[in-house]
Structure formats: structure tokens, C-alpha cells
Length: 121
Image 1 (cartoon, rainbow, N blue to C red):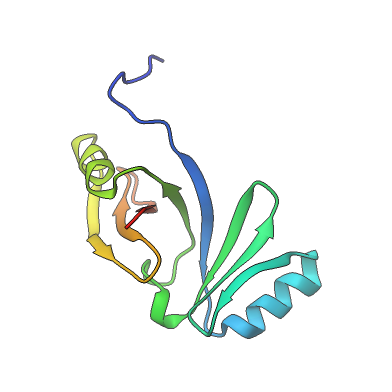
Image 2: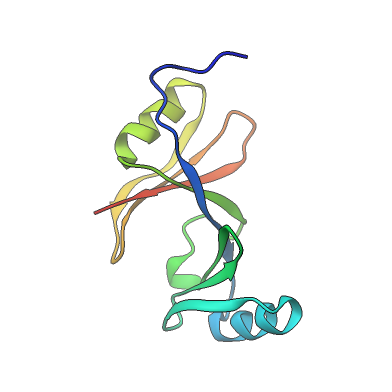
């Protein structure tokens, strides 16, 4: 398999888990797996240290995936990454939006898996 010379290397910055109650979810994942809290943004969002990848707990106000867990790809430019996804057979679920911490978009790969693309504001 050859690499696309136009592709920009990215990393999975987090795995997004929508939850109904961020505080309860933080307690659950800390108690069940010993995950330390990196930061909490009220009932909206919490980032837990899960080794090289962050477990991102998204409350109802931050659930951009419609309730399904998704890999979140940290990219240098969200619109360009979204265009690359679409050019290769993916689809747009939510176009780029500027949030309180970053720009993000939601897409699906050709097999229907949800992807979150996020990058700097």
C-alpha cells in the first residue's frame, strides 16, 4: 500500500465518549480504570489520561456524534482534512464549527464510522 503524498500526518488526539453525566463518568473511569483527570469543563467535557490517547467524556452539550463513540483526529487545518475525507469517499455529518477550545467537524468514513476532526482555532 502506498502513502498519499498529499496526506498530512495526524494523530488520534482522543477517543470521544458521549455521556449523560460528566461528573459521574469521571468517577466511573477513575474508579474502574484508575484514569487521572487532565481537565474538566463543568458538565460539558472532561479529559482523562488514558496513556498516549485521551479519553474525552462529552456531556450532552458537547456530544457532536449523536451518542456514538468516535476517534478524534487532531489535524492542522479542519476544513482541509474534511475535504480529504470527502474526496476519498467519506461524508460530512457536521461542517467545521468554532467551539470554545478548537475548530471541529464530524464526518463518516466510507463504512459509516463516525470521525471527529479537530484543530486550532
